[in-house]
Image 1 (tube, one colour):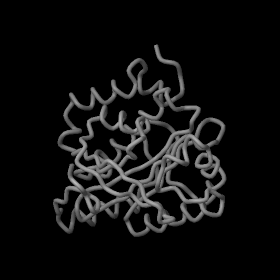
Image 2: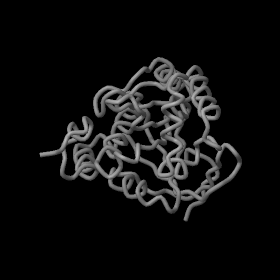
Image 3: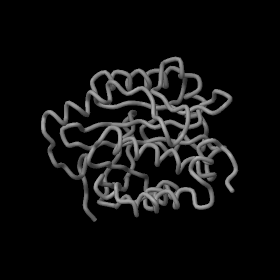
Image 4: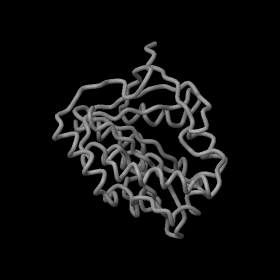
Length: 231
């Protein structure tokens, strides 16, 4: 098994102009349109809603990039750090809301502009897990990274015991490329599986169709996105 010291695992340099374009796009993006509704860049005013999402025992323990301990103070700092990253064109934090104004999901993007690659992580409100919403959210993130941001490659990590994420990434088309040690902001570490998916592979109609079917086998993505029962 390949041991990966730092991410991204695959590094193919892009031109300086392309790297700058990627940074500018991150700096200017405001929302994600399409796969799921009401997804926008996180603001400091979202601190209470995001804290409630992070504090759930079915969310917090699984995401190693989350602040510890989870309090409004640490979550505010988490959002502020991502706002600074966005100013630099190095990353962006998105949040999705349900009809009651609660945080239904989040995902953050870390950009390696010089390599034309990025990494995203996220989580879905427990009440929406197992209903296709998590799959739709992941597809939204993948599609945004490739079709809007325009990176060449997405790199992901999962904990060895995170079977839900492992299954989802495999179904979408990510390939396992090695193992690494992921570190929390507080310095603690965990062994992780490293995954990659290339844009040239994702854009094939066959894979996109397989990914949609795999994440929502008996419901249309529009129904999943709107929280409606499928046909």
